[in-house]
Image (cartoon, rainbow, N blue to C red; front, side, top):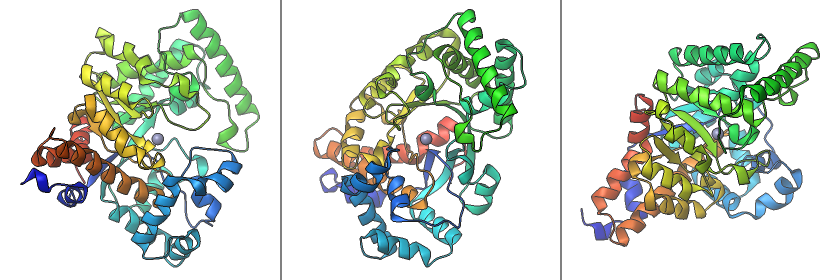
Amino acid sequence: MDPGLLAGPDLLAEWEGIRAVDHHCHPLLRWPLDLTPLRLRAVFTEAADPVIVREHVPCTVAYRGAIACLAEALGCAATEEAILAARDGDDPGTYANRLLERSGTGVLLLDHGFGGEAVFTVAEHRREISLPQYEIVRLETLAEDLALGVDDPSEWRQAVHAGLRVAVEGGACAVKTIAAYRSGLQLRRHSPDVVAREFSQLRAAVRRDDDHPAESTQSRSRLSGAALCHTLVFDAAACCRALGVPLQVHCGFGDPDEDLALASPLGLRPLFEDPELHGLSVVLLHCYPYHREAAYLAAVYPGAFMDLSLAIPLAAADGARALRESLGLCPWSKLLYATDASRLPELYFVAATRQREALATALSGLVDDGFLSGDEAVEAGRRVLAGNATALYGIQPG
Ligand SMILES: [Zn+2]
């Protein structure tokens, strides 16, 4: 192949037959659903404030690009009304499966801890969506559920360990932590006294919830506090290492419920330096705007992997630049493909399309600048789209 002839679209054509492994995404909303322009906009932002959704999302490059991307796929005008009319004219299941199929996705690794009761359960999702699926266990949700039936922190930690083991033996392929949201990622070991104090507060709160059930799972008491959250992460890391599954860690970009200042993956250094955790694989999710820090960790620690999901598609054209910056230090054998999509098949389709485009733009730029041959760029893309994830998670490609 002549490297000089390679450009973004050529790489996309080279990868056309590759069914991507989406190593981190979330379930779809149950259908039928009444989708309005505001509900469509709401999935293309991390903002919770309705003013942002109503007035400002339509003025983002990411959303305009998403509308254009969907219009091309659906063969309709590039307006919200035309897109909603196109989906309304179809059976919701047929429509969703068709968009997922067209996204080039072969396998979904799903974290069911996002979306509450409005999204499909594990069993429902398997029934409604034809793509092969694996489950990712969300650590904090499991730990909250188990806090009710135990009396002290050590009993609770043992129960969490047992719960993770059961989930993995039942087919789950990874554990995910959202400690970034609950305590920040400046990981450190905490004294047993502080862990015990925070645990007493958690147990009192979940017992109150049990006596007075909340109307939705959104308003129930949540695990929080650095001592409890960090202790759980260390425990989960040891458990993942023993069970031979990766630990996914939310880093960087997310909704305003997290303090982004405390979400740099550099705070996870203890997971890589502790000799007892040697051999653990840690997957740094999202990462943006800390993708260069994540790339550094991937470059120096064998167990560190990363992706740029969520930033792609929400950072629009900046996603390709971030991907190229990540490839400055991160070996492409450590970079993974994911959408972090949730709720609507439209978001899956746009996120998947933008991931491939960003990868093609980043790698073809490296070919143009003389760093890679065309063949190397094609192979790097194959690894990122599917090869790295199938090896890391020990799963079958789609
Ligand atoms: Zn996610």
